[in-house]
Image 1 (tube, helix red, strand yellow):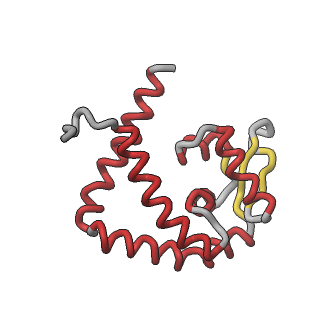
Image 2 (cartoon, helix red, strand yellow; image 1 turned 135 degrees about the vertical axis):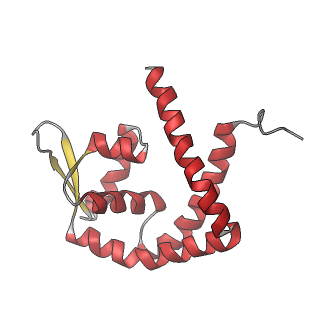
Length: 148
């Protein structure tokens, strides 16, 4: 049996992420969204103002080109707008009224997925894991930042 120190961190985290994302994607499909799209809409909702795409990419841990591809279907459905940012040079994304309505439609499906996951995994285990996952994101960012 492979020890934890030799088990690939990237592969293990990716398998876990894909498994959980699949659960949420299946539920959120009922609202016409993917888990990624829902996460983007919720991030824009939290900001309440247009968000420079570079900030949004950093917050959601996206490569910029991947973020642009993910934003395009949301823009086509008029759930977001993309325009000039406050500096005039950088583009910024903002949630539309239609985007807020879609979030409201999707929230019960998200909650259903969240509850099903927490029931199976355990609420206490999740509360313990979340800080470690946040530390993983920060550790990977730090390593990436020092290597560039």
